[in-house]
Length: 405
Ligand code: MN
Ligand code: MN
Image (tube, rainbow, N blue to C red; front, side, top):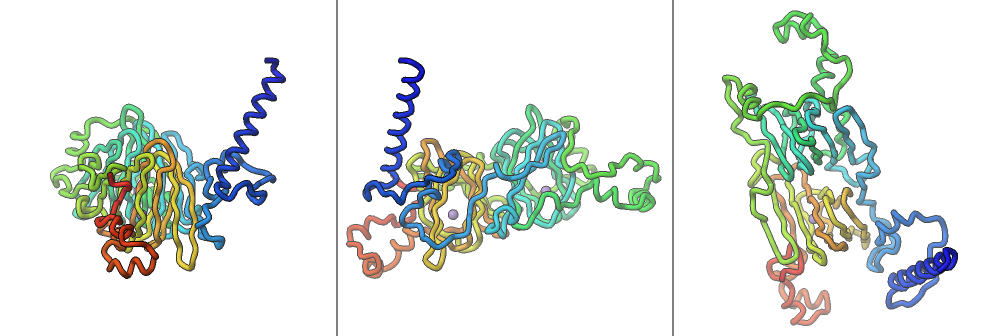
Protein backbone atom coordinates (compact mmCIF):
# COMPACT_ATOMS: atom_id res chain seq x y z
CA UNK A 1 0.00 0.00 0.00
CA UNK A 2 1.49 3.37 -1.00
CA UNK A 3 1.72 6.08 1.66
CA UNK A 4 -0.95 8.07 -0.13
CA UNK A 5 -3.39 5.13 -0.33
CA UNK A 6 -2.67 4.22 3.28
CA UNK A 7 -3.51 7.76 4.38
CA UNK A 8 -6.79 7.64 2.49
CA UNK A 9 -7.55 4.29 4.07
CA UNK A 10 -6.89 5.61 7.62
CA UNK A 11 -8.90 8.71 6.81
CA UNK A 12 -11.93 6.69 5.78
CA UNK A 13 -11.67 4.54 8.94
CA UNK A 14 -11.58 7.68 11.07
CA UNK A 15 -14.62 9.05 9.23
CA UNK A 16 -16.49 5.79 9.74
CA UNK A 17 -15.58 5.88 13.46
CA UNK A 18 -16.83 9.47 13.69
CA UNK A 19 -20.14 8.53 12.11
CA UNK A 20 -20.54 5.57 14.47
CA UNK A 21 -19.89 7.87 17.44
CA UNK A 22 -22.48 10.38 16.18
CA UNK A 23 -25.08 7.65 15.78
CA UNK A 24 -24.27 6.33 19.24
CA UNK A 25 -24.88 9.77 20.77
CA UNK A 26 -28.13 10.20 18.89
CA UNK A 27 -29.27 6.73 19.97
CA UNK A 28 -32.84 5.64 19.33
CA UNK A 29 -33.82 8.98 17.79
CA UNK A 30 -31.76 8.21 14.68
CA UNK A 31 -29.42 10.65 12.92
CA UNK A 32 -30.33 14.24 13.71
CA UNK A 33 -28.80 17.24 11.93
CA UNK A 34 -29.24 19.31 15.11
CA UNK A 35 -26.64 17.15 16.79
CA UNK A 36 -23.73 18.53 14.86
CA UNK A 37 -21.06 21.01 15.93
CA UNK A 38 -19.38 22.33 12.79
CA UNK A 39 -17.63 25.37 14.34
CA UNK A 40 -14.33 25.57 16.25
CA UNK A 41 -13.84 22.83 18.83
CA UNK A 42 -11.30 21.51 21.31
CA UNK A 43 -11.49 17.73 20.87
CA UNK A 44 -9.41 16.98 23.99
CA UNK A 45 -11.63 18.96 26.36
CA UNK A 46 -14.79 17.90 24.51
CA UNK A 47 -13.75 14.26 24.94
CA UNK A 48 -13.34 14.78 28.68
CA UNK A 49 -16.77 16.43 28.99
CA UNK A 50 -19.22 14.34 26.94
CA UNK A 51 -22.14 15.22 29.26
CA UNK A 52 -21.58 18.95 28.70
CA UNK A 53 -21.14 18.59 24.91
CA UNK A 54 -24.31 16.48 24.53
CA UNK A 55 -26.18 16.58 27.85
CA UNK A 56 -28.54 13.73 28.67
CA UNK A 57 -32.16 14.56 27.82
CA UNK A 58 -32.95 14.64 31.54
CA UNK A 59 -30.75 17.73 32.05
CA UNK A 60 -32.70 21.01 32.12
CA UNK A 61 -32.26 23.71 29.52
CA UNK A 62 -32.11 26.34 32.25
CA UNK A 63 -28.66 26.75 33.72
CA UNK A 64 -27.24 25.17 36.82
CA UNK A 65 -24.18 26.98 38.19
CA UNK A 66 -20.92 25.29 37.15
CA UNK A 67 -19.76 22.79 39.80
CA UNK A 68 -16.46 21.62 38.35
CA UNK A 69 -12.95 23.08 38.28
CA UNK A 70 -9.87 21.09 37.24
CA UNK A 71 -6.68 21.71 39.21
CA UNK A 72 -5.04 21.77 35.74
CA UNK A 73 -6.50 25.29 35.34
CA UNK A 74 -5.12 26.53 38.67
CA UNK A 75 -2.07 28.81 38.65
CA UNK A 76 0.99 27.23 40.32
CA UNK A 77 3.14 29.30 42.68
CA UNK A 78 6.57 27.71 42.24
CA UNK A 79 9.51 27.87 44.65
CA UNK A 80 12.86 26.21 45.25
CA UNK A 81 11.46 23.30 47.27
CA UNK A 82 8.03 22.85 45.74
CA UNK A 83 4.82 24.50 44.58
CA UNK A 84 1.27 25.33 45.57
CA UNK A 85 -2.00 25.86 43.68
CA UNK A 86 -5.53 26.49 44.89
CA UNK A 87 -9.19 26.20 43.88
CA UNK A 88 -11.27 28.63 45.93
CA UNK A 89 -14.52 30.59 45.52
CA UNK A 90 -12.54 32.88 43.16
CA UNK A 91 -11.98 30.01 40.69
CA UNK A 92 -15.23 28.11 41.37
CA UNK A 93 -17.89 30.63 42.48
CA UNK A 94 -20.31 27.98 43.80
CA UNK A 95 -17.73 26.79 46.36
CA UNK A 96 -18.58 29.27 49.10
CA UNK A 97 -17.85 27.14 52.15
CA UNK A 98 -14.74 25.11 51.23
CA UNK A 99 -11.49 25.66 49.33
CA UNK A 100 -8.69 23.30 48.29
CA UNK A 101 -4.93 23.78 48.08
CA UNK A 102 -2.71 21.22 46.35
CA UNK A 103 0.95 21.32 47.39
CA UNK A 104 4.22 19.60 46.57
CA UNK A 105 7.31 19.68 48.79
CA UNK A 106 10.65 18.10 47.89
CA UNK A 107 12.55 16.10 50.52
CA UNK A 108 13.64 18.59 53.19
CA UNK A 109 11.51 21.47 51.88
CA UNK A 110 9.22 23.31 54.31
CA UNK A 111 5.81 24.85 53.99
CA UNK A 112 6.82 27.61 56.35
CA UNK A 113 5.61 27.77 59.97
CA UNK A 114 2.33 29.69 59.89
CA UNK A 115 -1.28 29.84 61.00
CA UNK A 116 -4.67 31.01 59.70
CA UNK A 117 -8.33 31.43 60.61
CA UNK A 118 -9.72 28.53 58.56
CA UNK A 119 -9.52 24.97 59.86
CA UNK A 120 -7.01 22.98 57.80
CA UNK A 121 -7.85 19.38 56.89
CA UNK A 122 -5.37 17.43 54.75
CA UNK A 123 -4.79 14.12 53.04
CA UNK A 124 -1.39 12.88 51.87
CA UNK A 125 -1.59 11.94 48.18
CA UNK A 126 2.04 10.87 47.69
CA UNK A 127 5.17 10.44 49.78
CA UNK A 128 5.94 11.43 53.34
CA UNK A 129 6.03 14.56 55.48
CA UNK A 130 6.74 15.70 59.02
CA UNK A 131 4.07 17.93 60.52
CA UNK A 132 4.39 20.08 63.64
CA UNK A 133 1.96 22.09 65.76
CA UNK A 134 1.28 23.14 69.32
CA UNK A 135 -2.03 22.69 71.14
CA UNK A 136 -3.91 25.30 73.20
CA UNK A 137 -1.87 24.37 76.28
CA UNK A 138 1.34 25.09 74.38
CA UNK A 139 2.25 21.41 74.23
CA UNK A 140 4.00 20.22 71.08
CA UNK A 141 2.84 17.83 68.40
CA UNK A 142 5.28 16.31 65.90
CA UNK A 143 4.42 13.37 63.63
CA UNK A 144 5.41 11.79 60.33
CA UNK A 145 2.58 11.13 57.88
CA UNK A 146 2.43 8.98 54.73
CA UNK A 147 0.07 8.22 51.87
CA UNK A 148 -3.65 8.45 52.78
CA UNK A 149 -2.88 9.76 56.29
CA UNK A 150 -4.85 12.85 57.36
CA UNK A 151 -4.19 15.84 59.56
CA UNK A 152 -6.35 18.62 60.96
CA UNK A 153 -5.20 21.94 62.42
CA UNK A 154 -8.05 23.94 63.99
CA UNK A 155 -8.36 27.70 63.52
CA UNK A 156 -5.34 29.61 64.87
CA UNK A 157 -3.19 26.55 65.65
CA UNK A 158 0.34 27.25 64.30
CA UNK A 159 1.90 24.49 62.20
CA UNK A 160 4.46 23.44 59.58
CA UNK A 161 4.87 20.71 56.96
CA UNK A 162 8.21 19.35 55.74
CA UNK A 163 8.88 16.84 52.95
CA UNK A 164 10.80 13.69 53.94
CA UNK A 165 12.92 11.09 52.13
CA UNK A 166 12.97 9.62 49.61
CA UNK A 167 11.06 12.12 47.42
CA UNK A 168 9.17 14.57 49.59
CA UNK A 169 5.38 14.64 49.27
CA UNK A 170 2.26 15.96 47.60
CA UNK A 171 -0.93 16.59 49.55
CA UNK A 172 -4.40 18.15 49.34
CA UNK A 173 -5.44 20.72 51.93
CA UNK A 174 -9.15 21.43 52.41
CA UNK A 175 -10.15 24.63 54.24
CA UNK A 176 -13.58 25.22 55.79
CA UNK A 177 -13.94 28.62 54.07
CA UNK A 178 -14.39 29.06 50.31
CA UNK A 179 -12.71 32.47 50.50
CA UNK A 180 -9.50 31.04 51.98
CA UNK A 181 -6.25 31.76 50.19
CA UNK A 182 -2.91 30.12 50.86
CA UNK A 183 -1.41 33.57 50.09
CA UNK A 184 -3.21 35.10 53.09
CA UNK A 185 -1.76 33.30 56.09
CA UNK A 186 0.36 34.54 58.99
CA UNK A 187 3.92 33.41 58.22
CA UNK A 188 6.75 33.23 60.74
CA UNK A 189 9.13 35.10 58.40
CA UNK A 190 6.54 37.78 57.56
CA UNK A 191 5.70 38.37 61.19
CA UNK A 192 9.38 38.73 62.19
CA UNK A 193 10.19 41.05 59.26
CA UNK A 194 7.44 43.46 60.32
CA UNK A 195 8.38 43.85 63.96
CA UNK A 196 10.81 46.49 65.29
CA UNK A 197 14.14 44.80 66.20
CA UNK A 198 14.09 46.27 69.74
CA UNK A 199 10.69 44.68 70.30
CA UNK A 200 11.94 41.30 69.06
CA UNK A 201 15.00 41.59 71.34
CA UNK A 202 12.84 42.36 74.38
CA UNK A 203 10.27 39.67 73.52
CA UNK A 204 12.78 36.85 73.01
CA UNK A 205 15.18 38.03 75.73
CA UNK A 206 18.21 38.31 73.43
CA UNK A 207 20.13 41.25 71.99
CA UNK A 208 19.05 42.83 68.69
CA UNK A 209 22.11 41.51 66.81
CA UNK A 210 20.80 37.95 67.20
CA UNK A 211 18.05 38.60 64.62
CA UNK A 212 20.16 40.38 61.99
CA UNK A 213 19.77 37.52 59.46
CA UNK A 214 16.00 37.11 59.73
CA UNK A 215 14.61 37.02 56.14
CA UNK A 216 13.21 40.33 54.89
CA UNK A 217 10.81 38.54 52.49
CA UNK A 218 8.36 35.73 53.15
CA UNK A 219 9.70 32.20 52.65
CA UNK A 220 6.34 30.38 52.14
CA UNK A 221 8.03 27.27 50.65
CA UNK A 222 11.80 26.86 50.95
CA UNK A 223 14.38 24.12 50.67
CA UNK A 224 16.08 22.90 53.86
CA UNK A 225 17.85 19.74 55.00
CA UNK A 226 15.90 16.52 55.60
CA UNK A 227 15.33 16.32 59.37
CA UNK A 228 16.60 13.58 61.72
CA UNK A 229 14.43 11.04 63.52
CA UNK A 230 10.87 11.95 64.49
CA UNK A 231 11.56 10.73 68.05
CA UNK A 232 14.42 13.23 68.43
CA UNK A 233 12.23 16.09 67.12
CA UNK A 234 9.35 15.09 69.40
CA UNK A 235 11.63 15.03 72.44
CA UNK A 236 13.31 18.34 71.63
CA UNK A 237 10.02 20.13 70.91
CA UNK A 238 8.31 18.77 74.03
CA UNK A 239 11.06 19.92 76.40
CA UNK A 240 10.09 19.55 80.04
CA UNK A 241 6.43 20.37 79.33
CA UNK A 242 5.66 17.06 77.61
CA UNK A 243 3.94 16.24 74.36
CA UNK A 244 0.35 17.19 73.46
CA UNK A 245 -2.22 14.54 74.40
CA UNK A 246 -4.13 15.55 71.25
CA UNK A 247 -3.55 13.73 67.99
CA UNK A 248 -3.70 16.09 65.00
CA UNK A 249 -3.06 13.16 62.59
CA UNK A 250 -5.20 10.18 61.53
CA UNK A 251 -4.14 6.92 59.84
CA UNK A 252 -6.94 6.35 57.31
CA UNK A 253 -5.86 2.92 56.11
CA UNK A 254 -5.51 1.52 59.62
CA UNK A 255 -9.30 1.56 59.91
CA UNK A 256 -11.45 -0.97 58.02
CA UNK A 257 -13.90 0.45 55.45
CA UNK A 258 -16.99 1.92 57.12
CA UNK A 259 -19.17 0.40 54.39
CA UNK A 260 -18.35 -2.12 51.69
CA UNK A 261 -20.45 -3.58 48.88
CA UNK A 262 -19.70 -5.57 45.74
CA UNK A 263 -19.34 -2.27 43.86
CA UNK A 264 -17.03 -0.35 46.18
CA UNK A 265 -16.28 0.93 49.64
CA UNK A 266 -16.37 4.05 51.81
CA UNK A 267 -14.22 5.19 54.71
CA UNK A 268 -15.89 7.88 56.83
CA UNK A 269 -13.68 9.97 59.11
CA UNK A 270 -15.22 12.71 61.25
CA UNK A 271 -15.02 13.85 64.87
CA UNK A 272 -16.47 10.51 66.02
CA UNK A 273 -13.15 8.82 65.17
CA UNK A 274 -10.81 11.79 64.52
CA UNK A 275 -11.48 13.87 67.63
CA UNK A 276 -9.77 17.16 66.73
CA UNK A 277 -11.40 17.43 63.28
CA UNK A 278 -14.45 19.57 62.53
CA UNK A 279 -14.17 18.70 58.80
CA UNK A 280 -15.81 15.40 57.82
CA UNK A 281 -14.55 13.12 55.06
CA UNK A 282 -15.83 10.16 53.08
CA UNK A 283 -13.11 8.51 50.98
CA UNK A 284 -15.08 6.63 48.32
CA UNK A 285 -14.01 3.90 45.89
CA UNK A 286 -16.48 2.94 43.13
CA UNK A 287 -15.52 -0.04 40.97
CA UNK A 288 -16.15 0.05 37.17
CA UNK A 289 -19.89 -0.06 36.50
CA UNK A 290 -20.70 1.03 40.06
CA UNK A 291 -22.71 3.99 41.32
CA UNK A 292 -22.36 6.11 44.46
CA UNK A 293 -26.09 6.03 45.09
CA UNK A 294 -28.51 8.95 44.85
CA UNK A 295 -28.34 10.92 48.10
CA UNK A 296 -28.02 14.36 49.64
CA UNK A 297 -26.37 15.91 52.67
CA UNK A 298 -28.57 17.75 55.18
CA UNK A 299 -25.81 19.49 57.15
CA UNK A 300 -23.21 20.95 54.75
CA UNK A 301 -22.06 21.66 51.20
CA UNK A 302 -19.90 18.92 49.70
CA UNK A 303 -16.45 19.62 48.21
CA UNK A 304 -15.11 16.79 46.09
CA UNK A 305 -11.65 15.92 44.87
CA UNK A 306 -11.22 13.20 42.26
CA UNK A 307 -8.11 11.16 43.09
CA UNK A 308 -8.32 8.61 40.26
CA UNK A 309 -10.60 7.23 37.56
CA UNK A 310 -13.49 8.78 35.66
CA UNK A 311 -17.08 9.46 36.58
CA UNK A 312 -20.11 11.59 35.96
CA UNK A 313 -22.41 13.35 38.35
CA UNK A 314 -25.85 14.87 37.99
CA UNK A 315 -26.88 17.56 40.46
CA UNK A 316 -30.63 18.12 40.68
CA UNK A 317 -31.10 21.76 41.65
CA UNK A 318 -34.28 23.42 42.91
CA UNK A 319 -36.67 25.08 40.42
CA UNK A 320 -36.80 22.23 37.90
CA UNK A 321 -33.09 22.37 37.06
CA UNK A 322 -30.46 19.67 36.64
CA UNK A 323 -27.00 19.37 35.14
CA UNK A 324 -24.68 16.45 34.47
CA UNK A 325 -20.91 16.96 34.44
CA UNK A 326 -17.95 14.65 33.93
CA UNK A 327 -15.06 14.31 36.36
CA UNK A 328 -11.62 12.79 36.29
CA UNK A 329 -8.37 12.66 38.23
CA UNK A 330 -7.43 16.14 39.49
CA UNK A 331 -10.90 17.69 39.26
CA UNK A 332 -12.75 19.51 42.03
CA UNK A 333 -16.52 19.05 42.26
CA UNK A 334 -19.03 20.85 44.46
CA UNK A 335 -22.59 20.09 45.56
CA UNK A 336 -24.57 22.55 47.62
CA UNK A 337 -26.21 21.44 50.85
CA UNK A 338 -29.36 19.29 50.36
CA UNK A 339 -29.12 18.96 46.55
CA UNK A 340 -29.73 15.45 45.18
CA UNK A 341 -26.78 13.82 43.37
CA UNK A 342 -25.09 10.54 42.38
CA UNK A 343 -21.63 9.73 41.06
CA UNK A 344 -21.32 6.98 38.45
CA UNK A 345 -18.06 5.31 37.44
CA UNK A 346 -17.89 5.82 33.65
CA UNK A 347 -14.36 4.46 33.23
CA UNK A 348 -12.76 1.03 33.29
CA UNK A 349 -10.69 1.55 36.46
CA UNK A 350 -11.66 2.29 40.07
CA UNK A 351 -13.07 5.77 40.65
CA UNK A 352 -11.65 7.17 43.91
CA UNK A 353 -12.75 10.53 45.31
CA UNK A 354 -13.15 12.57 48.49
CA UNK A 355 -16.44 13.92 49.81
CA UNK A 356 -15.56 16.79 52.20
CA UNK A 357 -17.79 18.73 54.60
CA UNK A 358 -16.59 21.76 56.57
CA UNK A 359 -17.53 22.90 60.08
CA UNK A 360 -19.48 19.76 61.00
CA UNK A 361 -19.01 17.16 63.70
CA UNK A 362 -20.53 14.30 61.73
CA UNK A 363 -20.73 13.02 58.18
CA UNK A 364 -24.45 12.92 57.30
CA UNK A 365 -26.21 11.73 54.18
CA UNK A 366 -29.77 10.77 53.30
CA UNK A 367 -30.29 7.96 50.82
CA UNK A 368 -32.93 8.50 48.12
CA UNK A 369 -33.81 4.80 48.02
CA UNK A 370 -33.88 4.45 51.80
CA UNK A 371 -36.33 7.35 52.00
CA UNK A 372 -38.71 5.76 49.48
CA UNK A 373 -38.35 2.31 51.06
CA UNK A 374 -39.45 3.75 54.41
CA UNK A 375 -42.40 5.80 53.16
CA UNK A 376 -45.83 4.06 52.96
CA UNK A 377 -45.82 1.97 49.73
CA UNK A 378 -49.18 3.29 48.48
CA UNK A 379 -47.90 6.86 48.73
CA UNK A 380 -44.75 6.10 46.73
CA UNK A 381 -46.66 4.03 44.14
CA UNK A 382 -49.20 6.85 43.64
CA UNK A 383 -46.41 9.41 43.04
CA UNK A 384 -44.24 7.36 40.70
CA UNK A 385 -46.94 5.19 39.05
CA UNK A 386 -44.90 2.06 39.81
CA UNK A 387 -46.21 -1.38 40.73
CA UNK A 388 -45.77 -3.14 44.07
CA UNK A 389 -43.04 -5.44 42.77
CA UNK A 390 -40.93 -2.41 41.79
CA UNK A 391 -41.54 -0.78 45.16
CA UNK A 392 -40.57 -4.01 46.94
CA UNK A 393 -37.32 -4.22 44.97
CA UNK A 394 -36.04 -0.86 46.30
CA UNK A 395 -33.18 -1.50 48.77
CA UNK A 396 -34.41 -1.12 52.35
CA UNK A 397 -31.11 -0.04 53.87
CA UNK A 398 -29.73 2.31 51.23
CA UNK A 399 -26.96 1.25 48.91
CA UNK A 400 -24.09 3.74 49.34
CA UNK A 401 -22.33 2.06 46.40
CA UNK A 402 -24.62 0.19 43.99
CA UNK A 403 -25.18 -2.51 42.85
CA UNK A 404 -25.04 -4.18 46.26
CA UNK A 405 -24.37 -7.72 45.02
MN1 MN B 1 -1.83 25.85 56.98
MN1 MN C 1 -22.51 13.36 48.31
